[in-house]
Image (tube, rainbow, N blue to C red):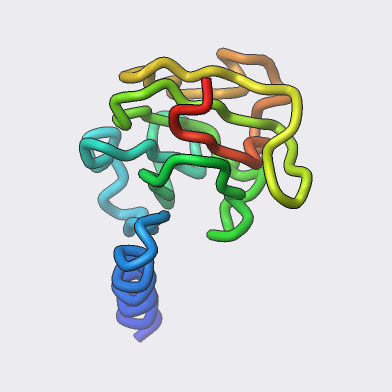
Length: 131
Ligand SMILES: [Ca+2]
């Protein structure tokens, strides 16, 4: 029953988000780097592209907290075709320093290990084409 409810929520989230073109959440059971569709940047809650996924394709700043993903991501895959700026903090309307510029195609599997422990469970803002 709980599994059905979770799946329904996921479908509802994907439906509403498809309209806004922002983010979607995948079932943790199917988590894999290859789940990230072309044209998106995907964030996973755990290292090595595991657990829930959040994906974005719109340009301009977005706050991961709008999708329940603030201070949670540990792995990322940039398939946007552009460089993407990630911020550690959020001002209310845009990301604020410190930043990472993630090259198109980059797929850091452990943000804390690669960019320093301050990036573990700490990404707040994403800006596709922002660097
Ligand atoms: Ca995490």
